Image 1 (cartoon, rainbow, N blue to C red):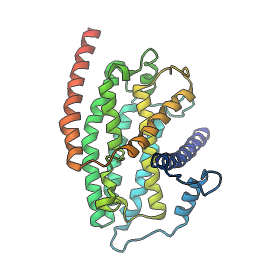
Image 2: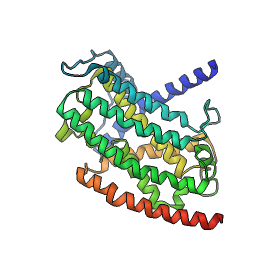
Image 3: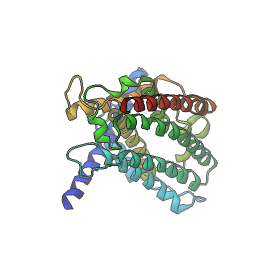
Image 4: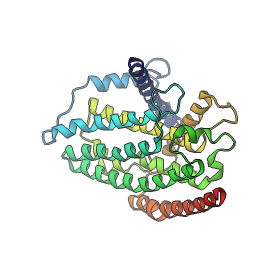
Length: 313
């Protein structure tokens, strides 16, 4: 029991360090895409910048808006942060203390609850901008969760298991992305929208909502929301690598380093997309999922279900 607790704490510390330095990678990447230097004043080439930012946020005075509902106002960032860490229990490692036989169901349940953290933060702030941002985020997240759940059925049909480890190991001969390239593209766009990232960051639209649902948060509350968002980016990159680029790598054969390189590649794609595209219009985003991704996912799902039936029977 004590070994399990120590292992989980060590894993969470590593996750927080990864999230911290991923923010530095994003700031450096975006700066060079925009022909500027980025953070380079703190320490050597700005490497301790995430630690300095964390120290600044955690030592600032916690804001208490006069009209806010205090209990849900303080619970919302903690709730979002805990849900983001819970998803990392599905990390497929031989050294993992927990083994989820129904991992995909656990992923759907936890990711479906993420919307409540955003709802609590926007409603409890008692601000019109925060409430509008949270409502936009809820509509966006729920819409894209439909197509995301449908896309998750594709690996299930091919493998016949809800376990992420078995899905990963079943791709030793061929990656699933080669079998269903359009589906993998829809999945990645859905992941970008699910994590409220540019060009789909309507919950935090600076031009019309002034940061959206987290406008009333500062200090530790903002730090927790920030950590939850970037932890979700990394975990969605992890699941993308598991579902569509699992198994053995063509360069590094079945090694943790090769798998981490895939995860880092997808994480960098989030940054690349943010630096490449402007923000969509909200009606175009909702039309994309309901009129584009949902019919396409249903058609591909019908096709693969017929093919699976023919193959097995």
